[in-house]
Amino acid sequence: MSGLRSTICAVLSALAALLALTAQASTGGPILVVGDSLSAAYNIAVDEGWVALLERRLHATGYGQQVVNASVSGETSRGASARLPALLERHQPAIVIIEIGGNDGLRGLPLDVFRTNLAGMIEQAQAAKARVLLLGMRIPPNYGPKYTEEFHAVYVDLAQRYGTGLVPFLLEDVALNPELMQDDGIHPRAPAEPVILDRVWESLEPLLGDSGAGAAKATSGAAPAQD
Image (cartoon, helix red, strand yellow):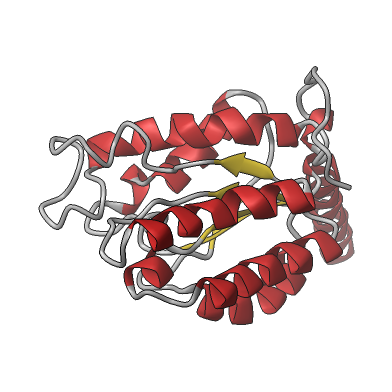
């Protein structure tokens, strides 16, 4: 009897491992979000943040991919760039969403340094065979209009240079609405998070069809230019 029990346990364990491998193959790896407090659900419940809402939408719409949220409040392009190689090795994502730069801009980081850091993150992700979605940010004109406009242009320029997906401004329709922003004027309230998700989803969904999720859900339309 003990031998039969052991055999049954071994078969069940092998079946579970096979199912896990099948699921991973069909989804093509998780979606990795590397961001700052805007993606870390700052001062709101984690399950109300746009990243948590994204995972729920993926599952509700038939995509099988998991979402790994590696966002850290206060993160900068330098810190995120240093963390990214280990995250790529550990999670082997199909898609990397990069939401970085707000803290750099608020601190007046030289734009050539910011550009180099952000470009390095894109290159690391693409070298790991992940598709990239860049979430752009705008900042107040604390350092003058020239810095402000050139800061935002970094996202547009890099998206064109590397052929990534792009959300031009993550907080579009949110940042100037006091009902959707916390008292600090920087971080969104919970009711803003679905609005943010809709903004991200518009640019993310075209990437899903070529990330392996097409095995879980058929998608149509032209593929973006990333390889």
